[in-house]
Amino acid sequence: MTVYRGTFVDTPLSPFKGHHLRADQDAAVLVRDGVIAARGPADDLLRDHPADEVVDLTGGLVLPGFVDTHVHFPQVRAIGGLGMPLLDWLERCALPEEARLADTTYAAGVAADFLDGLARAGTTTALVFGSHFAGAVDALFEEATRVGLRITSGLVLSDRILRADLFTDPDRAYAEGAELAKRWHGAGNPAGRTRYAVTPRFSLSCTDPLLESAGALLRDVPDAWFTSHINENPEEIRGVRDLFGCDYATTYDKHDLLGPRSVLAHDVHPTRGELRLMSQRGVAVAHCPTSNAALGSGLFSLGAHLAYGVRVALGSDVGAGTGFSLFKEGLQAYFCQQLQGRDGHRLTAGHLLHLATAAGADALGLADVIGDFEVGKEYDALWLRPEPGTTLDVALRHADSPDDALAKAFALATPADVRQTWVAGSPIRQQTSRGGDPDD
Ligand code: GUN
Ligand code: ZN
Image (cartoon, rainbow, N blue to C red):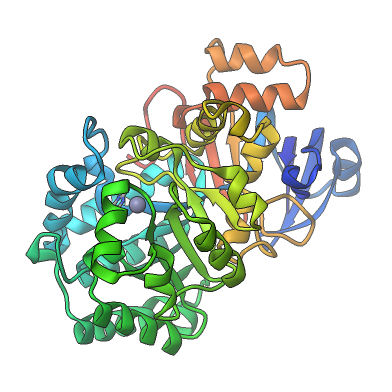
């Protein structure tokens, strides 16, 4: 057993329901076989467990591992394409890079960069948009298994409008998806950290027969996940209506793709009818604020989603999003609400932490396993420990409350400040100070 000692901050009860964040200074958690077996004041736990290893995480903050509910694996090398709206950005920045993943060796390198980027940012769990190529999706799952992150992902599907080298067809999409699910989902996944998600790119690039085959696969793979995009950009939304003659949510719903294991990214421009439908189906929405700002997609209406009872979590949406850090996404989510004046939702640092952790765990059906430091949950954590003398270090040392410290973390933290991450008590990577990576 291992005792971790430090300042633990989490949100076991939702700030969106009026609860406050929980912050325990000079506390400890006892981890047995990856699971939190006890927690309490450090002195008490150390006295009760004198023989166990102690990991000293004092200084900085220990937070639950971040949960990124929308991020594109093939786009890690395409981050930073500014100045374009969605459809131009796809054509000029994202898709040329995605086409390169036809080469599985290239894809394996991208998978390594991608998972390293997640871990460095403190993200321990992610719902990942895979690749249009099955070999690349295998490469992602193989690397995820090696690194130890919790990854749900799948083959990305398209059969119109985008560049033709990314197209599939309904039969091939089903067959390749079923094979991947056999290898990485359920019984094919003994460590339990990988799962399969049926992943049509977006309705704009999918015919009804392709979406129908996606629905069949979702039915046939027990407990599979579904993810796609929705209502991101006005031109895209007009295109979907012209092609299908119905609203965006219905294009998925008519193929039985919407349910409690469905996560739709963006939803910047929903109708009331769509919000009602998503709420009825139990869908969760991945809010991706840096992407929405970078592509000029619009301002997310968090209040409307909450009012309709649609669950919301955070996504980095790399590579339209500007990096893997959910500290940055949380800050941008805050800006996005501030910019909406009286229509915006007032967010505290506790809300931001909840969106980046427990809300993500809930959206991905993992609320019983991860998301906070309750006894019985698996120890997925990040240690935020900035270099002495950095502005974040100064700010944390002068914070006058845990809320204040957390707000300073969201304002200032970058992946360079994440010293260590754990999944189920196993260290994923340890960042040494000032370069010099033990893994290099
Ligand atoms: N819609 C369809 N594909 C994409 C993508 O790769 N990124 C974003 N932001 N939206 C999309
Ligand atoms: Zn996306």
